[in-house]
Amino acid sequence: MKKLFLLGLFTVGFIGLSNAQEIADNAIGLRLGDSDGFGTEISYQRALGGNNRLEADLGWRSGNNYDGFKLAGLYQWVWNLEGGFNWYAGAGGGLGSYSYDDNYDNNGDYDETFVFVAGDVGLEYSFDFPLLLSLDFRPELGFGDYNDDLDFDIALGVRYQF
Image (cartoon, rainbow, N blue to C red; front, side, top):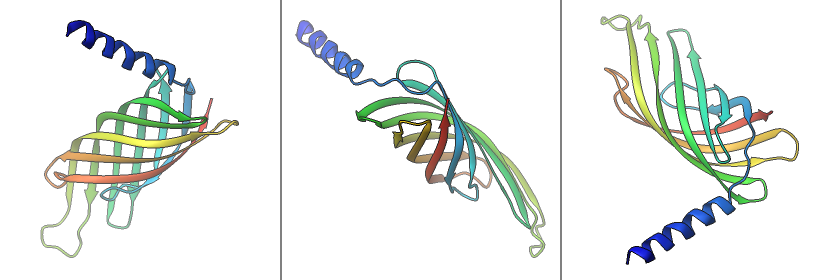
């Protein structure tokens, strides 16, 4: 039984390594989505190995009565599907701050700094020239007074690879 388990583990590992694709060392661009008042994010990816990378995103939103920012960091695993198509999954977290001026409510203004944990799963296409397009789904669980729920973020990523 032990030999069968080790053989199965070896086979799965070999298949995973044989399907690995080299990813770009660096990629920078925009992640366009929306989650609980935060929209456009500046996104940076840094490869750690053949199929692992770190992603850091800084998002902000500003309006007449509110300002906010959110910084997210994710560790991702990348697998090749076919040609330039990859799929990836990851986990991480971050922190954010939100300031709201309520001129119509007697309670007035409120500020909050919060932390969150996040997952990430998506598809990407790497062109022959240095462009990477992606579509991902990122559920985030916030831990704060006002931001204490589960948010679902779907976003389109456009990044320059170098």
